[in-house]
Amino acid sequence: MSVFSNCCSGFAALSKAAAKSAAAKFRGIGLKAEHTDWAARAVMCERCPLRVVEKNISYCGKPFLKKIDRDESLEGCGCPVRAKAKDPSEHCPITPRHLPSQQSASGCTCKWCQIGSTSN
Image (cartoon, rainbow, N blue to C red):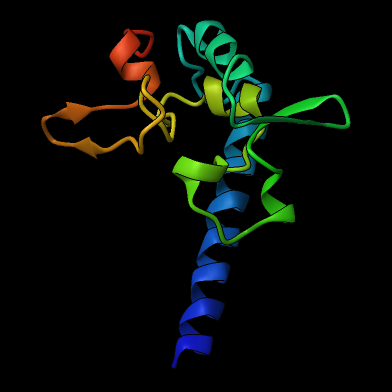
């Protein structure tokens, strides 16, 4: 049973990553909205200890395809920093104190929301 659940969770993660990639491409050609303050979000990511640079591209942790199964609050999500920062629906996986962030109906504890750079 656990092999099947691992397989499905990996497939779900790959599907989600493919959707995020497609949305980033649409954003790049102007078909989807960018976050109004994406540059400030990207600057925060560039200073983050989770940041990894590979082939001159900054990522939130190791690139996604190099590590599909991960704890985002410890290892980052694997998204390219610029694409993640430009997506209005994205949140940072950690708080300003480097703890796991949480989104709920009452608000978000992520670094971007707490510092105030997510006002759209």
